[in-house]
Image (cartoon, rainbow, N blue to C red; front, side, top):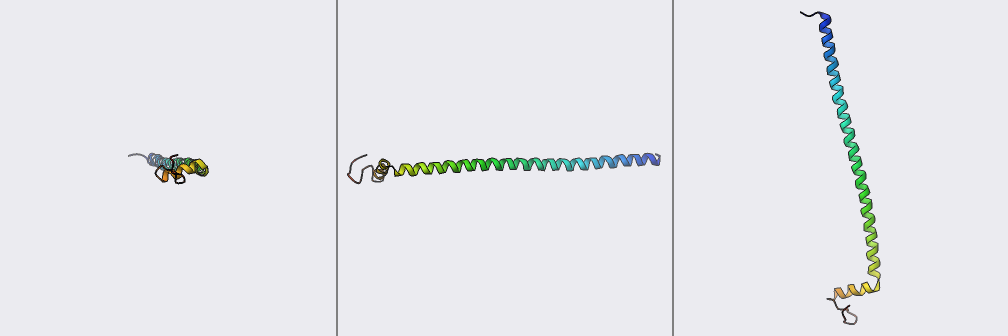
Length: 94
């Protein structure tokens, strides 16, 4: 049979290995969570950047459409389009 000091040494090594495994698993989970949250934050930032860009582009397009709609020749073409291609003022084609 083994001696008491041998049994204590084996028990101590077993406890050390078990503790090391537990800490390793905990550390890996913490790193995984950190990386996942970091990637999600990066994705949120990218989405916000695209959202701002799209909103800016839509705002510019709305401004361009308003400008074009207020231009006299464009208004005449729009009126003619609504009346089947005929100007309602003089009955001619644009």
